[in-house]
Length: 236
Image (cartoon, rainbow, N blue to C red; front, side):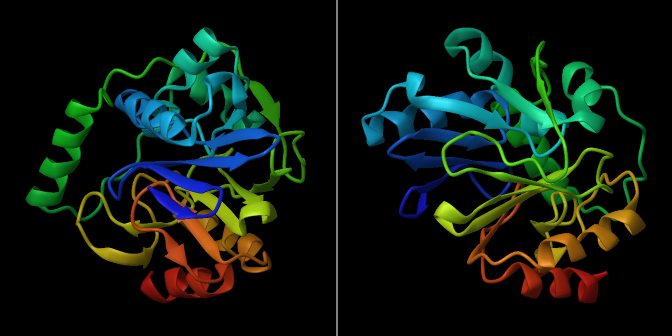
């Protein structure tokens, strides 16, 4: 799905990742679930671009529904996979602390599980090799993405600011569709390690100038980071 010039979404509201298509190459943000490999191939064909044009894949954190096709892409095309140092072990192994599930409804949970089964989300291949990044890094990738530390959902959760497409990618720092309740709108994401810290981290994107805020779950937010940060605080 094309959101704007040079900006595409893979997947959908249940699980999403993103592709930035620029003349100098392609940058991916998150890898969804393994089955999103087909979405990636479909978008590349539509753009008339080979996988060799992909210069890098940035993971907003190391959870299984974000690492999807990362290892396949790394292994088959040699694409480097970037993740914050604090989530590198999580991305490579899948090890993470247990968190409280919180409120849930049968229908949305069933939909999420069914989607995960269709997309291979419960059999992720963890990337064997990752490149570690830190808060404030500007990566030498198409769009010159800026790494913004957003600890809370996980220790190494990040947002990725790409002014070339007027967007900030936030992973699970927030959500616009709660996968367990089905509630839509800006709100805290479930399965968060430290909910208080995650809310405090939202102040870090409120200062970013962008027209799009793009979460890993839920509809794209076409508005300012400051507005969605305020909405999440209000919903908490």
